[in-house]
Length: 150
Image (cartoon, rainbow, N blue to C red):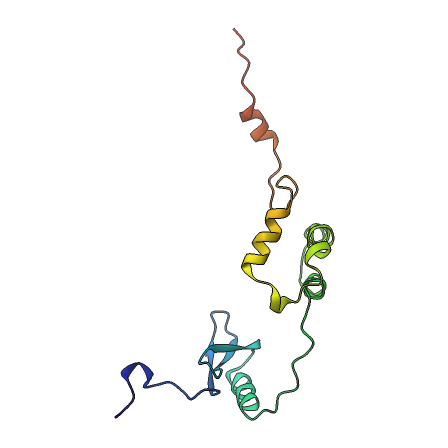
């Protein structure tokens, strides 16, 4: 009996293939023992680099996984390596230091989930949390009843 039509082109567990992303970079992906699709921890400049990573992974030749980042470590690296305008960098730093690090700083990125971020965000004061809109002169004018001059 042959393979089912849905599995005709699948590779065995552990084997993988590179794919090109919209950015032009290459992503190496493989299947684990449960058949889940796992992506390499980073993307690659060329298809050859991604293929080489997959071959090294399949042969067990990759170095041990580096220590997992915490939210604080990732944030520091993010702020230190991104080309941001000075004012944007200052605002990101303020929000990071006052809102994120005190509660999420020691959490490992691998333990962070959308649900945990939503729960954290819900604990913030709606008037001062990141993304809160402050009243502008325009909205203040529209909220104020106009005086009639008759």
